[in-house]
Image (cartoon, rainbow, N blue to C red; front, side, top):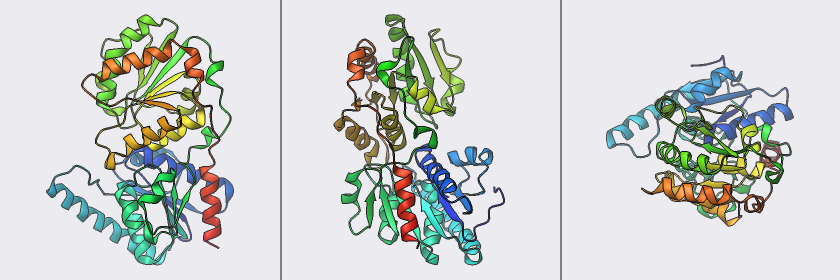
Length: 360
């Protein structure tokens, strides 16, 4: 699948599979287009990742390749994934052997594997961005040969010995770069925002469905906006729920929804954590237990250390603990206001300034 990509002298952005990898790549591409209007930009991703849904409507030139993830799969499935990775790499080697990109910028995820491997084989400069507290397998394997590894968190540097690292934070989309309304200035009806994830988060969604009726009955000056993810939406939209409990498969303008919310419940992907910091919103974070290297727990604990979130483990009683923690903050505006304010996110500028220096 393609939107007529041309790779000669292009900046190639790649990152996908999930929104946590795709949206930072988009943020960097948006920044590059603004900084260098004449620079050709193209995307490479996976035909089954979130980028396959978003790129066709984005206007960016793109190439989607048939690759799959490795995590938690059977030996036979891993072998199939390796074969597809090798085939996708070979496709890019053929394309880039004649139409050589200027550089490749990868933000992780299985969708970025072929582009990084092809860039290394051809001697094309490549840059990696690792958003999470625990680096992914691709970054671990390819970091030593990267022109630079940009780190979302300082703790990543110790996990990548021998690599040229620079701590920059996690890129957020342009809409998150303006000043946000403070949480203490919001007035009723207050909003509890649940981010179930672009791909869905079944256990978290189910816990919210159980806790929501009690919370909304107890706090009549609150409403609930619940992003379920596409996979859970069709099931949950037909469930009985409170009149002030609204659900959506995906929230297009998540910056606006965050800014108008007084409390957020979410998984703890690095992009979500960066967006919470950019908006200065208190959060209850429930890490996904099977995330690679348990990086979501490490992300959540980093947010807790900054005083920006409360960490809740995913247990069989999640609906109870989630309801209790949410009720405490919904009942106490002063407690919500004590969470740290928004911080300006400079990750895109820092990455692109560094890229420019290292390509000249």
